[in-house]
Length: 296
Image 1 (cartoon, one colour):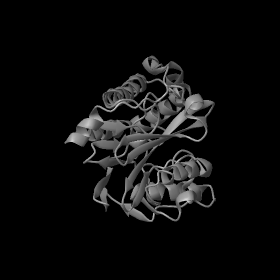
Image 2 (cartoon, one colour):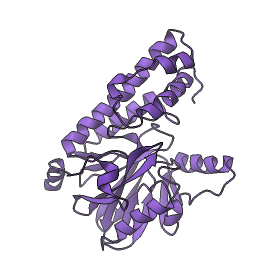
Image 3 (cartoon, one colour):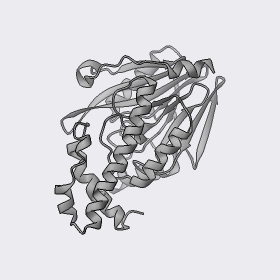
C-alpha cells in the first residue's frame, strides 16, 4: 500500500532537547494524512520526560490516544488536537491507566467517550480508592482483547497484547496507515519501569507488537524519529528488559539479598538512558518479588 510505504520512509525532524525545544505548549507531529502525534515534556524527579499521545482525525470527529499527566497538560493536548480544524474530539482511548502519567488529567475529557481495557479501569479505580480521593473520569466502555472503531471510513484497532508495564496496557493499531501507537509498552531510550510491571510478559507483548507488521511504531515516551530508527529502538528496549531481568535473576539465584542486589546491579549498558537512576532500584525489588512468586 502506498500510504504504508510512505509511513515507512517517514522522517520526523524532532529535536533531541525535549524540555528546551518542545516548549511548554507541546508539539504536533504529522505522521500520515489524518494521523498525528502530540508530544509534551513533564518533570519526573528532575528529568524532563517526553510524553507522546496520538490523534486520529476522521470526518466524524477526533480520536485521542492516551492523555497527559495532569489536567493542565491534558487540556493542552485537547486544545492542540481541536485546533487542527478537523472537528471536535469524540473519543479518548486509554492506552495505560498510569496515574500521574496518562490518566490524572482525564476530567478534561469527561464529555468524550472513554475506552479502556477492563483491567486498566479496575486498577485506576482501585488506585484512587486506596487514596480515598475522587478518581478522574474512568472509562465508559471497556473490552477484553480488542475493540474496533469505524469512523469516517477509518479503522482503528485497540488491542490488548498481554501484561507489560502494567495490567491493561493496550496499543492503537491503524492497519491501513501502518502505524502503531505503543503507549507504555515502548519507551525510546527511557529505562523500563517495572514497579507495576511483568518483565517476561512485557517482552512477549513487544513481540506481539512486532508481529502486527506496522512500519511505524510510536513510543509512549521519548523522542520521535524515522520509522526504521524507531523499530531499531523497539528492539533495543526489548533487549533492555531481557538484560535487566537476566542480571537481577543471576543475583537472585546466587542467594543475594534484595538490598545486596540493589547495590550490585549495574545494567551499565543503559546508564545513559533517562530515568535509569530513578528506576533501577524499583526494578530490582519488583523482579525479586516476581522471581519469588509474589507477583500474580
